[in-house]
Length: 394
Ligand SMILES: NC(=O)c1ccc[n+]([C@@H]2O[C@H](COP(=O)([O-])OP(=O)(O)OC[C@H]3O[C@@H](n4cnc5c(N)ncnc54)[C@H](O)[C@@H]3O)[C@@H](O)[C@H]2O)c1
Ligand SMILES: [Zn+2]
Image (cartoon, rainbow, N blue to C red; front, side, top):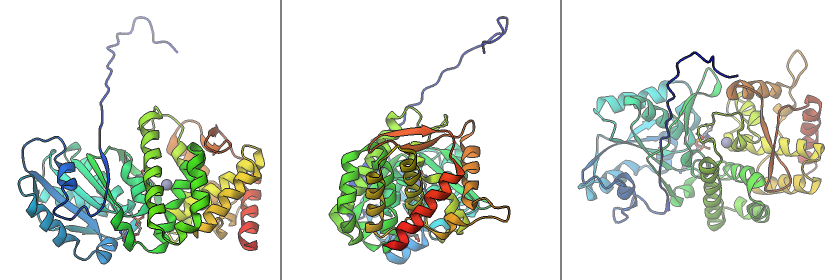
């Protein structure tokens, strides 16, 4: 609709460029390795940068000397880095981002140390910690510099390299959040060595997600190397993380909607049911595990609709299973008192989250995608039943 012809309008147009390096390296806390100092000092401002370091209890259990190593690193680079206080610690995993507590805590630490907008929040941890610390860093003074050091597979290949930050509120995943690109990201493969198997495998689900939509060769690689993922082959994982991160970065950079103003969310393929499974299970099903089930469900649905062949569906189900991931969970088929599947609430939430018209991404062959605006509940139930049979006959 056109504006009224006699109305006075001043048109404002802004474009704000964002650049951030994503550095893939190892041994980043070795004082002899300048990568971390170079990342913090990437604008070469000729000054010393004040740093608040934040981590979470799970990472610290596996890396008890993280604080002392960081202090030694900063000491060695004292001309460029200054640590303001000890390494601070939030609760492990999802607990860091459940409710405001974790993010508030980080905001108070920032304030207590008198950090300014050009100071740095250095966040080391999994997706839960990065999401909460990123939100805090984006809010105080309307945004401090955030340097992320993601330490899980999923954080390295997805959360850590993207532009979203957020927390869960009142049990709703990612209800509160902001788009705020980081200042720099350092991906250190060494951190993955201490990951529990569940976290190691779970992160692979996001790689299958993006490969199936965007990169047929990568999809083949994942299907071929699924057993190696399960056996914790470091080289296979290094490639998985690197390519998956690259595809996420490419999508954010070239997809035309980095801050998700429109209704399309290709990177959220399979996530409408995944988020619902996480919530229904009260996070007993972890994000990566839920994504594996979510993409299995939507690919089975796509096969029923004829958008992918049964062979592609089977390749995905086999690949995920060989990685050690489940493709079905009883909550997929649990019904509420009124009769409908509980996961269908996920579609409602997804629509609310997007605004406007529900838009869901499905694979269209391998390496291509299509958008749909509705799903048939009967076909969803049939897909869930198919997955149950597939999983139980294995
Ligand atoms: N912002 C985004 O764009 C985005 C994208 C995808 C997912 N997410 C969010 O990310 C979260 C999931 O992230 P996650 O899978 O990293 O889980 P997580 O942060 O819950 O970490 C998983 C577990 O691994 C532990 N851990 C972390 N690093 C470790 C290490 N090196 N060694 C041993 N243990 C370690 C943690 O303590 C935790 O117990 C979810 O909340 C999800 O919603 C956000
Ligand atoms: Zn995800």
